[in-house]
Each structure stands twice: as C-alpha cells, then as structure tokens.
Image (cartoon, rainbow, N blue to C red; front, side, top):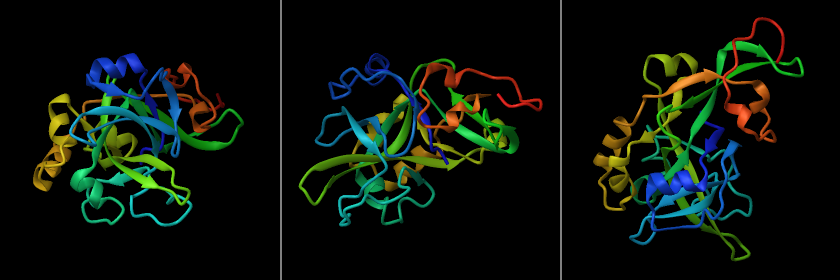
Length: 236
C-alpha cells in the first residue's frame, strides 16, 4: 500500500509533462503527502491534457453520501476493472500523479521511533536520474449536496516484482514511462491495452532508509527523504 509520497515543484512538473494549461500555480515540493490532501494531477477531461489539483482519495461521481468514502486513495490494479469504486475510472477517466518518490514501511525491520515506540523502518523509493516520475491513477468529478464540485483521484498499485522492492514491501505504485502517457490518458484506449500498460509499468527504482519522522504527516521538510543508517538499538 502506498499511503505517503513526495510531490515535485511546479517547474519540475512543467518540464516533465509539457502540459498546455495547469492550475498548479506556485506548487512547491511536498515531502509528506497523505490521503485526503490536495495533490497535483495530469488528466485529459475534454480532449486536452491539463494539470490540476485534486483530492487524494477518490469520490466517484455516483456517490450520494455527504461524507466521502473512506480509504479510496489506492486502487489495486488487479481488481480495479471490476470493482464498482474503480471500474469507471479504469475504463475512461485515467490520470497521472506527478511524484518524486514514495514511502513504504518494512514490516520485517522493527525500529524505535524518536519517542521510543516500536515501529517499522520507513524507506524512500525514487528514480535517482530524475526529479519526477508519473504514477498511474484514476480521477473523478463529484458534486456535493451543496452544489460544490470536487476533483478527486486515486493511485494504482501493483504487486512488486521479486527482488529489492518486494524485499521491503510487496506492493508498489504503477509508474509509467512518458511513451505510455498518451494511451493512458486517452478515453478510447481499450481495456486490453490498459492492462498491458499496467503489466509493463516501471520497476527500476532505488530505495533507502529514512527517519521515522515521516510517520507523522504533520512533519514536512526536505530532510524526510535523506538516507539514514540502519538502527542499531537506540531511537533516532
């Protein structure tokens, strides 16, 4: 499960995605984005690829309750095409979530937090060669009872392949290469081709240990992604 990630700044996103229009304004790098927070997205709502800001946690257009659904920030790619929460998005409203990297916690590597509590070792995954990667996602416009409209999104996850990533966590985001963006964002891409894009998604990422300060979503600073040595008993 990917429940925390890092977003790039406006300049980096402009350089990577080359969108004609965007509402990122003066978006600065966010080092500890969590569910329900606003995040940048790239999508194609009316035949033009644009950038916008969405709620991380999908609210489907058919949702009737006043409160948004819970835990809709991740969609498992293996079942998304059949689940009511995700199937419309998988069929025609796919997006990209710009990221610098993401965090996962290794349940097999216990640590002590700064307060002395028991926890799991967090890791930061990223591509050392670039400031931006593109996580595959789904988007939706939802109208609340008071008439206000909310753009929301979820990111797709997949099983991590055997190797360094799976040794830390068994799931990972679906991350796409630029050559796959047009087909992913197009409403007319066939379900078979969508599945092929997911199956061929990127797995070429580095990972390193980071401090347990990232456990608290209120913590927000560049040092959250800095590498730390393995714990050898004490807290950090």
